Image (cartoon, rainbow, N blue to C red; front, side, top):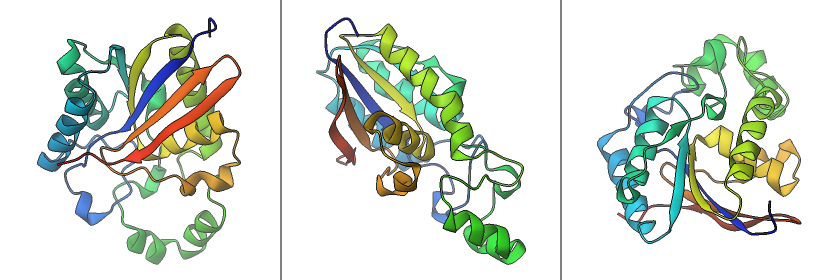
Length: 204
């Protein structure tokens, strides 16, 4: 990357409306809650002095709105990157874990036992997610070598990207916390990536 370090401020979108129900959201286009707006505003204030040159986000409303808030102090509007969407959760979208377990106990048990391998029914696997998200992320990073940029995506997307850049197996996917509105910082150097911060929650 042109021999200079790049900083990627990787954020998960803020809390969404209905988060307390803990439903599988996936590609459902739900908005931020009032708390989610405040979480993003807190991270925007924290990053106000960082010289961000660009902001990218998934095209889903919760990510796009989060990126708008983060980019506003810098006069930056987010560029939508549909490849950074959350994993498609197929026919499980909109359901709670208890509802899925009751309807499809065998499939749910298999999914739980093989996180990173077993695809969501009628949806995507983690490998499917990585096949679209990783090239998009790498292209964004390469196009902004030596710069500081923000990328706002989703819990599953961010975890998959972290496994990729750190060279970890997908079995470690859930080892990374990705709370609503949390910030992770990655540094890209010519010899690879380094994790500088992980899942730092907004200070409200």
